[in-house]
Image 1 (cartoon, rainbow, N blue to C red):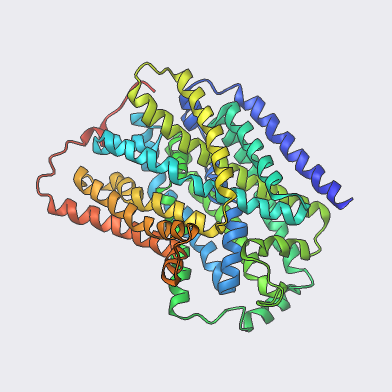
Image 2 (cartoon, rainbow, N blue to C red; image 1 turned 90 degrees about the vertical axis):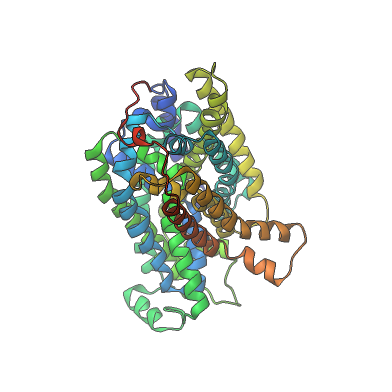
Length: 500
């Protein structure tokens, strides 16, 4: 009976997504509808679409379990950082200016943004290739995170779980792209908020936690606020900063600003996005921080990617709530998978193919984007079957992409004197620094491993932060050293393109 209820709840969710896909898919008529939703998204739609793309099963399962295991309650700092830096400050600093320039210049992708600002087709091509390749491991981590939950709660083979996730994502993508995805994100965002609130309530009152008194007792224990040495603090703050500021340079997040209707909606989106992040991210990391109330390290503590799923199963929650939790995690993951796939594939079709094949019409571009989405989803499934922890896959992806493009994107909004040459130096610097742990991981997978290489492979968040900081410094320093500032980029800041 329990499994039947879970499957019925899951079936209702899938049916709802299909209905949204069919109804909204009919409204998708142009490449602008497919990629930026016709630039007509309101505050709630934009903010919830941003939030659901931000937080997936990767956060709930990989990061919440991992930080809880290592840091106890200190791990909640990651959720607070995501709320303050990844949502409130990001929207405050980026949303309105990005929306303005994207609407004026009819920008649809981050590589297109970079070309418009720096006047470099090579930069656009490089960005498109990097984005497509290195969003794959992030997409794969989404599969892996959700599959571990479904395997524990439903007892279904991991491969079947991943195939179901891929199928739902493909329906939303193939039926209409951004328009369908944004409407689905709105529904999924509401489910996530109610789901996480209920989940927190039932986890606190579970016999393992023991209510508020149990939390107070846990806080006083060695595992509550775990003793933190220098290395642990560095590792924790690297995770906080990477998962917070890393979103600033991710194309699937930047693209959410492109679709905002007007300045007023961008302003309203700040508070909505912040509340969503506080509830979902703060709640997720809080749940993970309680893992030592459920299990003992070295005795019965599950593998890192299975800590939270087993906590949910052990908490003896009502079956219908488990169904809601399952839908919550599927919603978060499908939304993220759609955003990542659409972003990666639109860069290929718009910034690589259409930029070089002038005869490509909007219709052909839209069709090719959907074809690439299908390829991308399948490729992500293949990578998800490798033996790589969720946290590692995500940190490599976020680190390389944000390390490469955060500085050139954010500084472009405020710093008119940033030169093309300095931007290139910043991109290459960030890319090379963030690539180090990914290369180390590749060496371990091919049998070339020692303690040093394995240690470097596990420091993805640290290298990601170093890459973002280094690229900003390089951009600013080399622009200051370049006395010519010969590029005329005034059109980027004041010009208007009439045709979409």
